[in-house]
Length: 89
Image 1 (tube, rainbow, N blue to C red):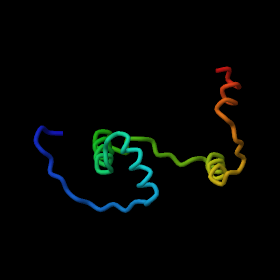
Image 2 (image 1 turned 60 degrees about the horizontal axis):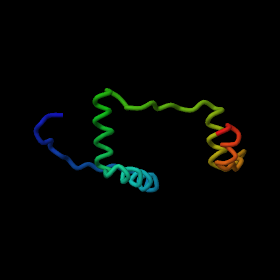
Image 3 (image 1 turned 180 degrees about the horizontal axis):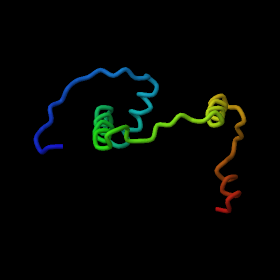
Image 4 (image 1 turned 90 degrees about the vertical axis):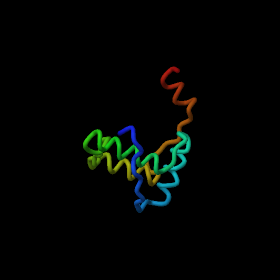
């Protein structure tokens, strides 16, 4: 970044509407909007010379567990108190 003002440009990005709304709620807690978040991502990408986080494709077992969890399969409700009693907290 330079000390001078950077030129701003407008761009269009197609987003999943639900994902956008969820992300905006998160960014609001940091006092920033979607443009701020995108600019942070772009700045980090430039500094890292790549995507600034790991992007991985899950193996078959992990993908199956994720799919099952999204469908509510093999899930057990556990309260916070039950978890605490199991770890002795």
